[in-house]
Length: 480
Length: 153
Image (cartoon, rainbow over all chains, first blue to last red; front, side, top):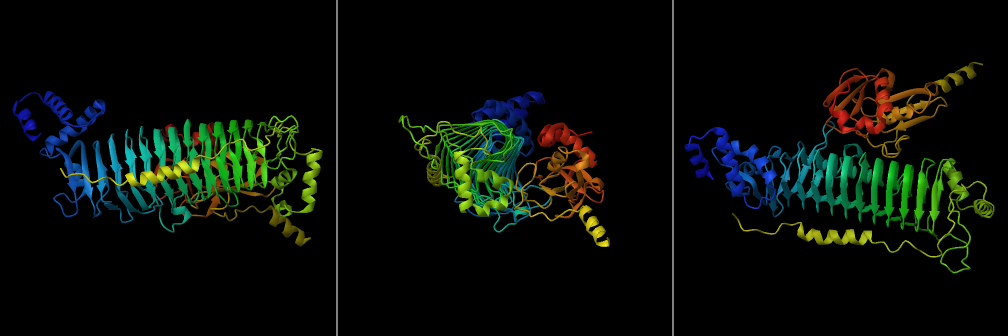
């Protein structure tokens, strides 16, 4: 490359043409570069630097190690040519914030540590087509005035953050105005013993589109995954647990999908807020407990679809407030305090073929008259009817809303009477002569046995994580 | 008689209360209130004091009531986490850098000075401006990236 550049210089051809030729040479000489559009774009960006820096950014692979010729990651990046690879060997790297300004792969071997010493961001991606893998990123201190992240991608496309370990980091990965990025197979551990106020989000997305978030293991943050103004995201097979606020949190993010994730032991499981068209399939919402803990909170949302999810052991499994055209099919609500809480602001809810068992209250509402929800063919373990025509569905409609649950919704302290004889009588009387429970909330065709099917979510997410943990350690490569 | 007067004046007094961060939920958006650098309270004519996680949530709630039914609105002074000051006398700033609970970047200060450390995009605004902002686009509109990139004026 250096001779090429010199020869071009020597011809005394116009600068602009020389520049174009240089880009051409760079593009052709670059191995494994798939996107030519992207290549030329970044070529323009990098070529002048090549000439000015006496042509040093020419290496396809740069090896960085604490004792080697190149001992800082920043120097490694300066030396690598666009589309090349910087291999970082084991050791601890403490250097000013690393800026990746060209398409390249930054890859750790033997888990090198990038240490922010508590006062800075670690890596900032400012070029499209960047991959970061195999690094341990640590000590990104909390800050009152900036959302510091271990890796921040800003205004770029096609970044890949795969197989890294984050610990003691305020924010983990922050995608800001990006397109086509993926965050997969990473571990996020958060700041140990941090107060709630000084904990950031493990994966934070703002004004971003076309993202894949998969097979990450996340704990110890404020929100495990946080979306704000995100479009077309797919979130799958992540395990997000023991986060202080939510395992997954959507704000203002339309047309997204999440499936086969596990959300457990979070302050609350998942919140989907002020958002349209979200599909939630085969997830597990488990053990999200506390005074106001939800497995899933839907707030001001249109066209949400829930299929095949499991809700187990939550204070409130599903809370819907301000939901329009809500579709809930083949979900399992098991051993929760409240199974489904519907506020009167729910419009056109459809509950079909769900299983309800072991919940203190299967379905409850605040008793408002605006609520519209249809139940059909759901299985309620509490159902006391019969099936004379043997079609698998009870011949007597089932009212899943206990009178007592309405009273509790109005006067929370009445909950102490839950096991009392009086409440038992009250519920029995209401069942015989319904008077206060909403007439709309009735399943005319309750199933006689479970209909939702077996859960698939948890197992696949766990096993996906197990198998990817093996791959997340980059395989040893020959030097050069 | 005196006793009755004292009792009456005690009842009519409007004052903010402590918020149990990490436990209480926002009356408007139902999110858990976790960050003591943010938050707001509204006291209704009945004397109930309701807690909110963010300034725009309090505004959204206040807009649902006639003005006569609101006895007071307080917001957290960004300079002192957990300290509530009357919204009517506070200065509001749209900031960037550190995210706010509902994404709008709105913070309040009691002394009229811009918040320290944060980048101010717009400000100072008055409480009425905040109400107008939320009235126009809701809490989502208040946080829209397009809105945030433009200046409001």
